[in-house]
Image (tube, rainbow, N blue to C red; front, side, top):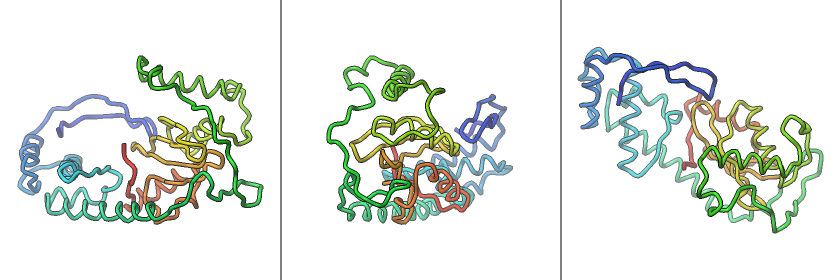
Length: 270
């Protein structure tokens, strides 16, 4: 904990570890302060990076005690105040996040609408209800079949199955393809990559919901979209009930704005 290190910032989603530096007295004292969740004001000569790391460490530990989760992007502006005031300020920050997540959960619970039959907008077509066949093949193997595979083998198997469904290799796929359930994972992956995000896992929950896991700005996000239109059903972040006004390709820019304005609240975690 708090060991000083160096890394290379390769891209918006990739940081390459370079090595660990020699420690000073501040790192050891910060570890002692963290054991009691004390403010960092008693430690002298604290570098700015250590102050930020300590603030998040206090928030993370306090969140685990409360049975909650917190991500750095949600609390960037709060790290220095938490480091200087300790667990008292951490409680204030976490209470704000938990209240916002409860409001989002209440809105989701009150929306008793069947997602598969909800109105969606298809570009170039009038607003209408899209009927989806009840039986759709899963884009992944069954659990018994996948049990003996490594993570890389599972990812390779998933990519191969998607390509087999499309019937074309990636380099030969048309840029504009008709929206079907079979090519929904591929279209979602392309939308994320075009927006600067890195897809991690994509799976079809049911004919009306596609779950997309991806990394953006060095954070993991989970979003549920409509498999035909890629219209967002559950953004995984607080959008004040406006999730359906966003599509998957525009969601990363919304996340970036939330980070830059210090208003990001993540509502879906692993």
